[in-house]
Every structure is written in structure tokens, then in C-alpha cells.
Length: 314
Image 1 (cartoon, rainbow, N blue to C red):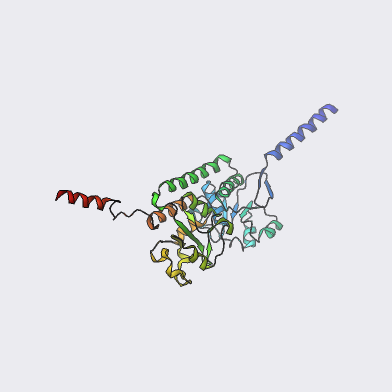
Image 2: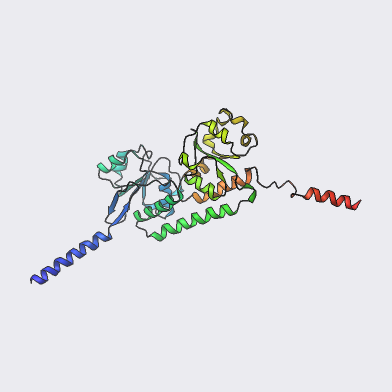
């Protein structure tokens, strides 16, 4: 009888251990391990890039609310808005009874949400590698296997490579200034935007040493004298009033790409739409870079050959 009881106890321990092993868990960007007995079915997302990642993984139906800035894809249009990522409406979130809240690790709301018993996963991609990693974590939270996230990342990576291959050789090594918002805050080499520019074969005037998104003195850009400027429509107003900017060759030569609000959202969000962002940057370079091909001009040497031929026929 004792043997039977002992084996029953062992079996119970094994079953308990198996149940614990099967519990869903993810370690967020704070290093905090968050666990669930089963995949969350009610998700609140307080960061647009995380909202887009959830939906790209086919899990839009699990979202019960998003932040005020999340605006893609169309399926989320009818969802409740619960403030911004940094200043969310805590009461509204609690009332929704979410299984998990996805948000930036910089959010000041994390302690309050956790104190109220909500599970929080803090994630904030800043580089291409981060985007790949965060897709994997979001997939885990949604109860998907790693293959789902890997498939999304392969699509992004292949599209960025295709955008690079589409560029004519003449635009390579173009020196680019990308303004994220009017501080001016720039996208440096260390940012995911800077990494995309590097993969497109162009040079960023803001070195990695200054950080991913540094605030610059406008005179810095004048001294750096970029060949091409990329900026959102929200930020372009007043640029010509900055000291020295009216004399920049990029401004005088119209080597400037101004992206409307919807395209700016694509470009500044480190998520599944980075592929489209790379295509937008490549199109800008192909149309506005100083070294781009000029379709109205004859090929190099054509005028000389024509003159020689005319001379030979006289």
C-alpha cells in the first residue's frame, strides 16, 4: 500500500511539473517573466508597433482596446481607445479585464497596472533585431509557435533586400538626413530607420555614437550638408526658417522627400510595416537623390557620338 501511495505521489508531482512546463511564459524587455495558464484571449495594446505586430500575426480578434495612436490595420478602427502609451486611462483598461497589456517599457503606467493585478508585457523594438525578437514574443503571448513570427520576419527581411536591389547605382552613397519630428530629432545610424537606410546602400549623416534618435542643433545639419532630406509632413513646416537651412543645396535643389502622415506612420514604427517603409525610402531616393538617373538626358557620351557621326557624314 505504501508503495502504491508513493508512486501515486510521484505521479502527482510529475503531472504538476508537466503542467508547469506547459504554462505559457515570456520574458519582457525589463527582464520580467510573465506567465499564463493558457494563451491570453483579451489583449490591450498601448504601442502602435505592437498593435500592428499582433494583427500581422493574425491575432487582431484578440485585441479589446488600443492606444490613441494605433491606426492600422483597418480592423482596429472600432476598438476602444484607452489613452496614450505613456498616459493610458488605467480605469478604462481595468474595466476591460484584459489577460495582458502590451506596452512600452518606458511607460509610467506599468507599476499601477501591475499593482491592480494585471499582467504586463513591456516591449519596445528599436532595431531590426529587436523587431524580429519582439515578433517572437508577441507570437508567444498569442499562443502561436515560433514559425509564425519567423514567417513574418522573413517577409520583412526579403522586402527590405528587394527595395535595396531596386535602386540604381547612381544613388548609392547618397548622404541622407532623416528627421523623425521637429526637435529636430533625427534617425541616427543606430536606429531601425538608420539600419534600413544602410541596407539601401546610403549614408546617414547622424553617426551611431549620437544614439538612435538624438535631438540635434539645426546648425549640425547645416554643417553636415546632406545630399537628401527625408521628413514627415507634420515636421516640414518651419524648416526653411531654421538658421542656414535656406542655403542647403538639398533644400535649394529640391532633394527633399516630404511624407504624408500615413506614410510617416509607416516609416517611424518598428514593426511589420518596415518592409513598406523600405520601399518608401527607396522610392524617395530613386526620385530625389542628386545622383539619380535623368530620363530626359541622353546616355553619357551620346552627344559626343552624335557630333562625331554628323562630322563623318559631311
